[in-house]
Amino acid sequence: MEKYLTNCFDFQRFEKNADLQVVINDVHSRYAVQELSLNDMEFIAAAGMTKKFDKKDEH
Image (cartoon, rainbow, N blue to C red; front, side, top):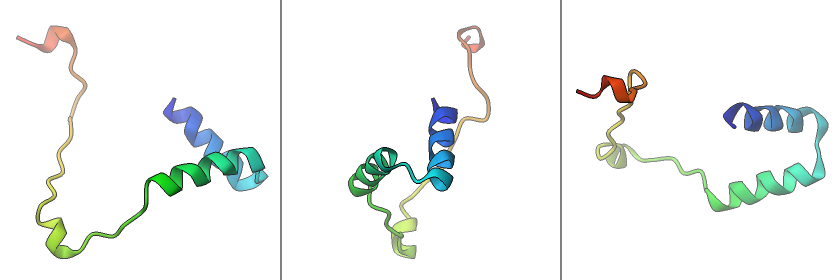
């Protein structure tokens, strides 16, 4: 799915499809981009999975 979305956004960059632009604008209107201040960043902790775990990895 992620690859599909990436392809759609790449397509839009060159083709300027009106229907796809409506969807993109809708998403942008729901999720506003906001820059965090340095004070706000003190409360952010970034963490991630370093590998994908399978059921067999759980002991």
